[in-house]
Amino acid sequence: MKNNFKKTSPILLGAVILYMLNIICPIVDLYMPWYLSLLPVGVMFFYLLGERSKFRKAINVLLLGIVLTFFQYWFIFKRQELFPYIINSIITWIPCIIAVLCYSQISLVSQKKLLQVALVAMAITSITTVLGLQIYPAASRELASATGEVRSLYMSLNIGGFEFIYALTLSIPVIFWMINQTKGVLKLINVGILLSFLYCIYESAYTTALLIAILILVLLIYDTYSHLRNIIIIGCIIFLAMAGSGALSSIFMWLSSTVESEYVSDRLLQIGLVLQGESIENLDTETSNERLLLMKNAWVGFFSSPLWGNNLITWNKNILSGHSLGLDILSSAGVFGLVFFVSIFYKVYKKIFSSRFKDLIFQTRIVWIGFIILSIINPSTFPIIYLVVFTFSSIINNYNKV
Image (cartoon, rainbow, N blue to C red; front, top):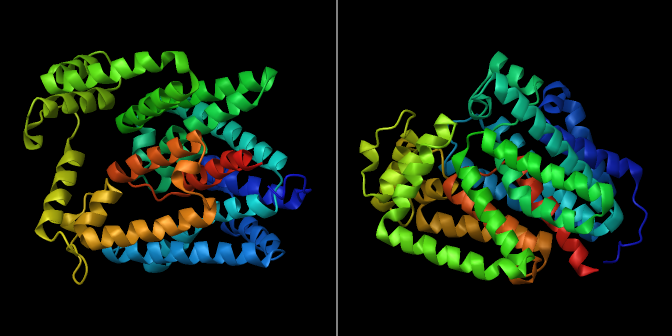
């Protein structure tokens, strides 16, 4: 890359670090004034002005992001206040601006340092989240909807919520890459960071995040340790065979009895019951199966108007799951809407990476595979998730271009 030996401005680095800390650490977000949180964004655009082509690329990315923002507002979030929603959504796309800066204004050495700082900050938040969950076991889950004093309390303890836990999951390939790129004490620190990520994901009781993390780990081990590939392949064959025979449902039900977390236990039990052919409406578990019912409702809504959806002219909240970006787009905007959304998002991807998917390094591809899975079964439009998907993954991919 042409910026390999270019000196990076410490002011720019400081701005990027301040922005990352603001979205990684809830306690920083809680106490940082809104005008100070916008300062790093202004600094980034000031430095982009130095290269008109990169500035134009950044503006194009933001414009595409705004198109997707209005799309989601019209079809999914129409009951929210427009102006705050638009501002928050634009902020969500700032990690793309950092990715553009990495190609022109930030040297490879500085990019790696920025990535290390971000991973350390995520590890610190992982540790404080685990400690906070010892006091408030449901805090990470409650942060998804908590407001007022409850939300401020959890954030003051630096407890990460839904989006943080899934950002940890998507960051596993990134920390794997960092472990392979470092030596000595720093390598041990990065191993510790990986362990803190995994433990926090487990303690958070987000079953989907835990299952995606396991899948990502299997793929990374398959790529990294060639002598284990045959074992993994055989394991996958056995897994599929058990799924066809019904034995897999029994395994999930057995696992549900061994897990401490009530949420994780019930989710595993629900999977086991569904695999046995049990109707979603009849699942009898301690915690609610409302999520599955809402997703089924969105699926039914999609089939009622599969081409252009149900929310093109009138708006109907009842056909939205609130738990799946993919299903909500299908139900509200239909196949045409999904094609439009994916096409615009792909344009953003091309402007950031300028490469075909198969040409990305393996770890970056795994980040994106995890992100696609997440978007299918959960909401995924959050700054910290885009920080991993666009900024982190572009940084590690940049090293492959030197």
